[in-house]
Image (tube, rainbow, N blue to C red; front, side, top):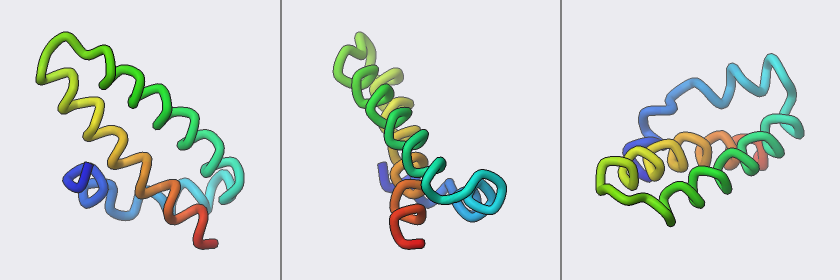
Length: 68
């Protein structure tokens, strides 16, 4: 998750500028829940790692949206 959060970089700011913080918060929370489900049922370590990478990216967007 940490690598995904670092890789997100300026993505949260760009998303919030375009769509607004409330919409970014809701959509990223729903997407993160979906990727957590994928990680829970992942049959291979690569799928598990990819899902957690995406959760890290989405988590950084959620954190930024909560702080605005």
